Amino acid sequence: MRVASKGWRRKNVTEARTDDTGLLDAYSRVVVSVVERVGPAVVSISAGPRPGGGRSATAGAGSGVIVAPDGYVVTNSHVIHGARRLEATLTDGRTLGAVLVGDDPSTDLALIRVHDTGLPTATLGQSATLRVGQLVVAIGNPYGFQSTVSTGVVSALGRSFRSTTGRLIDAVIQTDVALNPGNSGGPLVDSEGRVVGINTAVIAMAQGLSFAIPIDTAKWVIAELLVGGRVRRAWLGIGAQTRPFDRRLARSWDLPSAQAVEVLSVEHESPAARAGLREGDSIVAIGGHPVATVDD
Image (tube, rainbow, N blue to C red; front, side):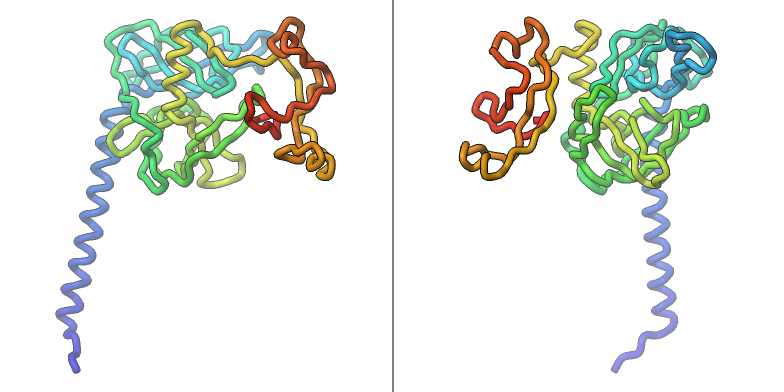
């Protein structure tokens, strides 16, 4: 029978503490490195009054990230949508005027351009390579506190939520990073200093539930906005709702689902009108693919 000595136990406790300290130091170095690389490219955005006038009609404020040295800045659509005046404040204290390049409420993304060149930029990564549990860093300006840093992990991938236009935003990144009003539009960054998402939303009254638009989606939206100021999408030209069917009726018609999409309205000279769709029709498949909901 062997009995461990007190000296042996003290030695192992000391080694464990040393290992923990080393891990914490490494974690700190990663976060500091990320902030030093990306922080200068994060701006505070001030959006002037919306049409309608009055001080209460302000669009508010948020964050953005510079993606090109000639002044292109990515932010959230809800930060700047409808604003008549835009300004961006850099980390060096300069406040620059900005113009709207394009706005896409369906993905809650927008592109603005500040009036300057030679600006610091952030490197865009790939959100497709993210893994649950991965370290992420958010940089933004919550409540006007400029260059605020929060850290956390990727809590889940592939989330969806509905935009202000009613469209679903897919592949949304869920994190436990602490975000507050003013963080919207700021970058979500991986441990290599690459932007992997654009922070967009939190759930009110909840802790540790934050969401970011994946940077792969943002890249596509940026390209579309640069070309024409808007995102081009397929258009059917109908108003519709999801309609449940009686299961016996669905079986008798050999339908793949007990629900379909009911056409409520058809826009004049739309693709749907040219295809012969009418109010009251039920869509059960498109191109041979089953359709069960409006989101399909």
